[in-house]
Length: 419
Image 1 (cartoon, helix red, strand yellow):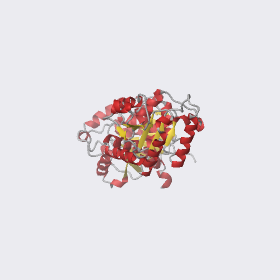
Image 2 (cartoon, helix red, strand yellow):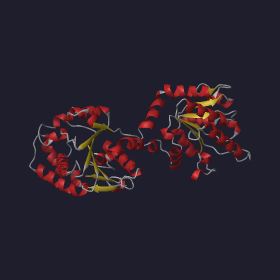
Image 3 (cartoon, rainbow, N blue to C red):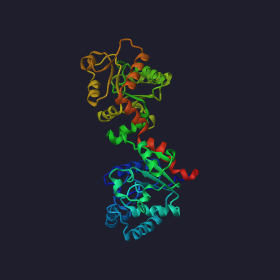
Image 4 (cartoon, rainbow, N blue to C red):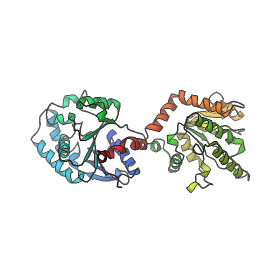
């Protein structure tokens, strides 16, 4: 079954810098990643600034800074509808008909609630009357009729009243609950007739993750975790990986979605080290934490063993992690303690001399003979008490662009199919 086609319509697009333009860019990337055809239809921008796979259509009359639009807008700002308004509206309508007729959905950003190109707004209302295209989504970031300053620049009557006119065949979307309440009041409609779709964040771009680090983050499903533990160590008996596996199992039993990533390979100088890795894999299976615990060493193509990463990728994983976890029996210097400190994530470590010397007062030290279940409860308590972690967890689980697309945007693209 073919996925519905969608056009994004606005005054401008990337490389123009602005909040709406940034949202459109993120939406376009997410649509393409999900296999949805998308076209950007704007008055000004650049085809080369759009994500790969996005079609770009430029119609200068849509630009809020087009000379004709500025001339008409100046008279409208003074409360007069110029004679040129009708001709401009008709011209834009006819320019849009052959383009928008190709799409199942058109997502219109701000044009239905902002005055910056009222001939365009009027033309879109006429296309609504003609059923071109079948499904409009009015993505409303800002409203002139409710803004303290903007309210003085709109007037009762046509065409300004279009910016507060409800159309039942259109889906209205705001970017926050506050905006939803404002739009519901403006349109005099119940709250449940307006959707809220929050903006999101791009973790890969914001955290500056390399291609390889992002591949691992996706493979290990780190962005859907409540708690990400990083063990930046080799696979040796001195690192006490068995204890780490038991802690992960205890965290799972507490209902915490945990991911533990061990970055290093087995010791190449110890012929028994690979056998030790395989014994840990067996223990992982026995504890039922195969989804929760991952060795980077086994993350080669097709799950093939032998994969290794450099410090650049490990540094990326530090930025994804919530805690640096080092339950070692012994350490020579405990370099990961310093690395975690520089990146700014807490340290959970046994009280080996190196850790005690470097960060005794700053680390969560594992007590001698402390049961894994007890440490898991302390980690869980930290996760609930630390406001920075709570916000990070909330963003990671609910405000990633892909999550927002899957949960909130994609259903809107099939609205007409179900009606």
